[in-house]
Amino acid sequence: IRPDQGREGNGRRQRVSRAIADVDRRAAEREFDERLQVYLQSVAANIAARNANNPIDPYGLGDPRFTLPLSGWYWQITPLSQQNAQVKASRSLFASRLPHLADQGVKAEIGEYRRGTTQGPDGRAIRLVERVIETDEEGKFLIQVAAVTDQLESDIRRFEYSLAATFLLLA
Image (cartoon, rainbow, N blue to C red; front, side):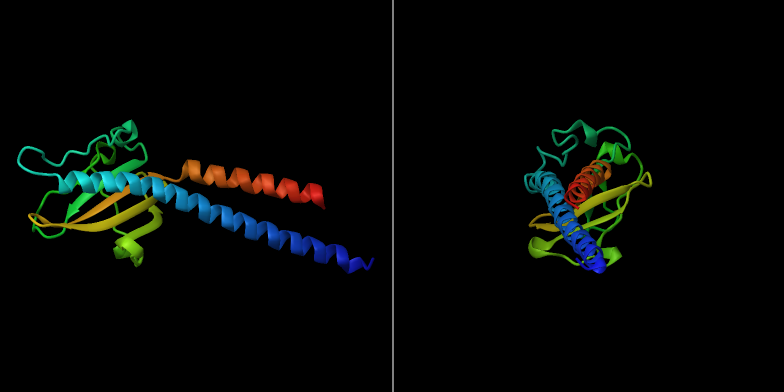
């Protein structure tokens, strides 16, 4: 065994470990985004079903985190076709507003969704999913749903630590 073979093996293990961790991160973010997208679709359905007898009111979306001030779970509806139209938002946003990913240069993906991580109203990192929809009667709306990434990042770190420990045991 050459003395440099041990270092080559360590470098290779580190690259493999990093690649596996990156795949896990992307999968975890995709799963989190899909969860947010379900809420976004619920808000969109509420707008589509709106009429005089059914005003926009997706306030809890079945999850109490959307009603607790600054809970880290938010939704927002921004009318784009109407001048001075009122922005509707979850109670959890309190008096704050969500940033627009389009303004931050995030490109729309298939289905016109934008996804990204940005700063939330309380300074914590949030994962944000947004989409523009259009109705026949009221025009275009930007619908956004966001949640803090604390749990997501914790899960990713736990996987990375487990992965590192596994590779250390294999060394």
